[in-house]
Length: 104
Image (cartoon, rainbow, N blue to C red; front, side, top):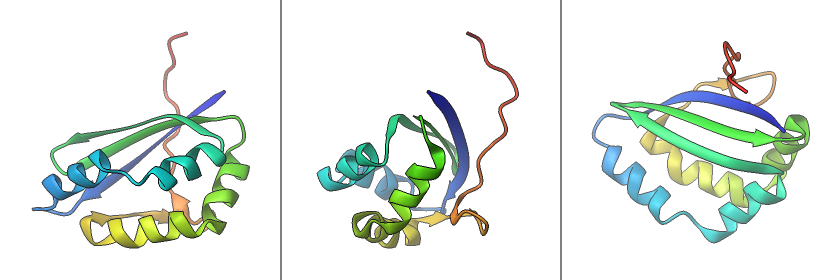
């Protein structure tokens, strides 16, 4: 299983609402992530910076599934006003961070 990470930002003043929405994440959004093959998905926050980490066996398949999924599109619309999202135009997915070190 390969691991991936991204960095995004919460807009100032939206930190509590961002947390609340993830505390109450839609069950169908969780199902969508699982159907996409994503597991061990975690999001951490430091100030306004969000750091996401997830694992998948097939990144391209996961990205394709999410891009075509109406639930994911709805989630993106709901979360968009709370976040500054930097998307890679080649993948229409947040820029992924290059791995620098891994302790096995």
